[in-house]
Length: 236
Image 1 (cartoon, helix red, strand yellow):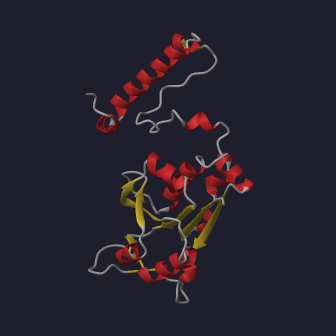
Image 2 (image 1 turned 30 degrees about the vertical axis):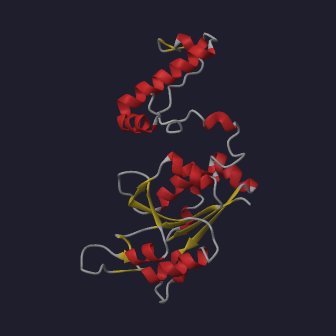
Image 3 (image 1 turned 90 degrees about the vertical axis):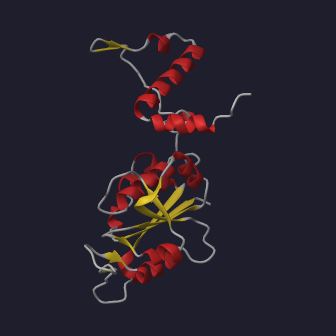
């Protein structure tokens, strides 16, 4: 069975967007995965198709209603659907490559894209939504975040990447940022390809790449090094 993604959104026209191009788009056309955007307003109960209301306790903005969202979620993910239910939210748990791999190994996802000030907490609790964040910043809505998550997941599906080994040394796969890359020409504006990469000595190349990955990680993401160190076995 192919990976199946359902996206609940107020802007279904944003999908597939970039997911209809390149690797993800070819995989979508080939049936390696499917994408179904659903309009949340279709589950509204009034003629204005209202999906939000003023926040309880006062405050700025509007909040997406629990009853409307529950109907949409229940339609997209009825009893027996094993797919995790995700809510793209800046207060969610940060998305990691480890979680991406877990999702890619599953049957698919149901993604709720929030808008306005947020989503009524009761539907989050009642429908078991997993809140996911793609970074410490605020977007206009959950749709761009959903596109990011799906792109990260789809490229890991079997057969999507031309070379299955091409992801093995990417950033975050081994707890480090990825090493620098070079290709022809040999000389570019006075800058040369590091000699070790054209030496033909694969052991030295592997050592250089690991050292460069560790250096970049220490400079840019020391938190990753600390996390990696805490998970390594202690030598006795």
